[in-house]
Image 1 (tube, protein in one colour):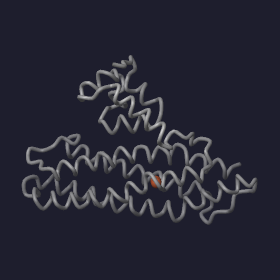
Image 2 (cartoon, rainbow, N blue to C red; image 1 turned 180 degrees about the vertical axis):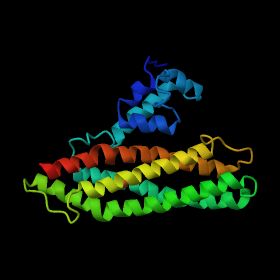
Image 3 (cartoon, rainbow, N blue to C red; image 1 turned 120 degrees about the vertical axis):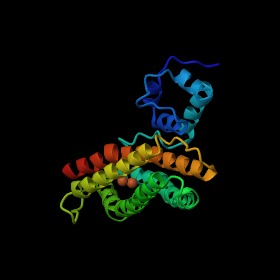
Amino acid sequence: MMTTTKTLADVAATSLSAVTTLERHGLDYCCGGKQSFDEACLAKGLQPADVMQEIQQARTFGEEDRDWQTAPLGDLVKHILATHHEFLKRELPAISNRMDKVLAVHGARDPEMLLRMAVVYRNLYVDMDAHMHKEEEVLFPFIDQYSRAEAAGQPVPRVPFGSIANPIKMMESEHEQAGGALEEIRSLTRDFELPSYACSTVRALYEGIQAVAADLHVHIHLENNILFPRAIALEKR
Ligand SMILES: [Fe+2]
Ligand SMILES: [Fe+2]
């Protein structure tokens, strides 16, 4: 068996595919990052070599490891839309249906927690829907124009909102709100610990929300840390 002396944090730092693979397996590279990769895998009943292989495959087949610091911004926008926006559009309504079902079946057993969770989730769903719409209809098309102008060696076009930094500021604060909603759900569910009454729908509900949280983590990283700063830099060029 292939073994490594690496910690979870070491492995996470190698690539974005590593981050998403670790998240998919619930391997905490953040607060639990100092743990040995091998031991953490084994504790979850996973073979470290299998997980490593998955990371390698994601690197080979995925586009994730393109260097988004240098790739054309238009390509990064396309990647965010095709990967992360599509994922949310598929998952958010599916989770909403599960939430309704869980509320109808178990609402009376755990009314305080489930009602609050339903409200927080509903707001997250509605807010993310509107948020993606703003990015898709307003902000991203301008970023795309900036990227084309740069490629053509032309000055960036004027934007109707003064500076691109203005809508970006708004998007960043909406990202924070979404993160806050997911944090609240995490704490309401005691870190997604399944309650005694959990049926397969409760399980699917919790897993769905955890998957959204993991995906959003990467999605927001690409926007806040790469896309937005690069767009602002193009404007100042
Ligand atoms: Fe987005
Ligand atoms: Fe966003």
